[in-house]
Amino acid sequence: MGNYIKEIVRRYTLKYNTRNPFKLAELLGIEIQLGTPGCDGCYMFLKNHRYIFLDQNLNGSELLQVMAHELGHAILHKKQNCYFIRNKTFLLNSKTEMEANLFAAELLIDNDIILEHPEYTICQLSRLLGYEEKLVELWTQNRTN
Ligand SMILES: [Zn+2]
Figure 1: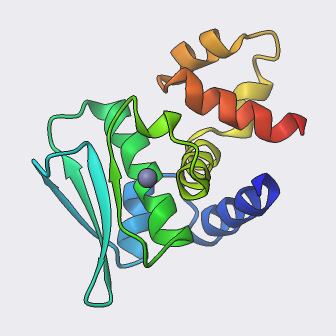
Figure 2: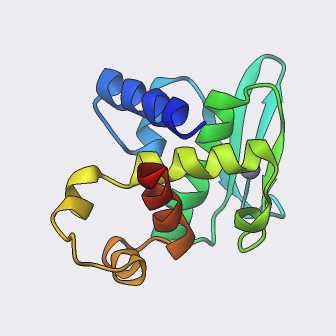
């Protein structure tokens, strides 16, 4: 599963030349709406269109992480709806949630940054990058097995 997702992310980032999930969504014709959807974010497939709803009150790095997760659903699980609730979604171990989290980790974390700091712990990397430790941990796990 890990290599498959790594490969998908690699293909998209090479093709569109960006790791920014907002830019990717725009290029892929996925609609993004900021508002107060009642969750941190959700993905929906409606009338053959892909929509991502995001909570406008999230801060920059939270917004990026939720967006990257939802983009993972839009690309990997096009026809399934998903609701993202922070601090809960990372604990879910359903296959689709795991895949969306891994997609987010692969998209947001650039190899080079981690290679430049080989001595850093997950906690230090998490602070350096501004993302949740869980995301960095997923990224690291995906390279060791
Ligand atoms: Zn999800």
